[in-house]
Image (cartoon, rainbow, N blue to C red; front, side, top):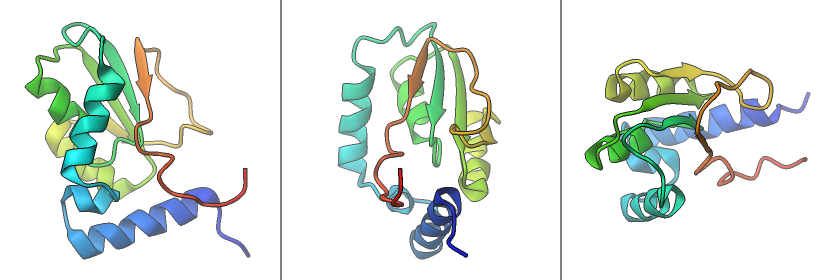
Length: 125
């Protein structure tokens, strides 16, 4: 039986987490590129009052980055990797849940962001 895209994704990131621990490397990114991506993707956003849904929130790094820049809105993080959600909830005060954006309902929000979910080629559609 062929694993699903979600199973492949979870296995890949669990492997990185085991190898790198709680670090940006566990999300298959480097800190400099991650910071640059966050800045580009959120340029022009109302960081003081916005509601944001972060699909593939990983370790909750976007939330931390937003707060450092004055974010005061509502943040919800979604990820398919339970271990990432546990780590992210420590950073986001419990604002993340295990969910698959392809099959689970998404919250109503001002901004929906998926900054890293296309980094992994799992094949198929």
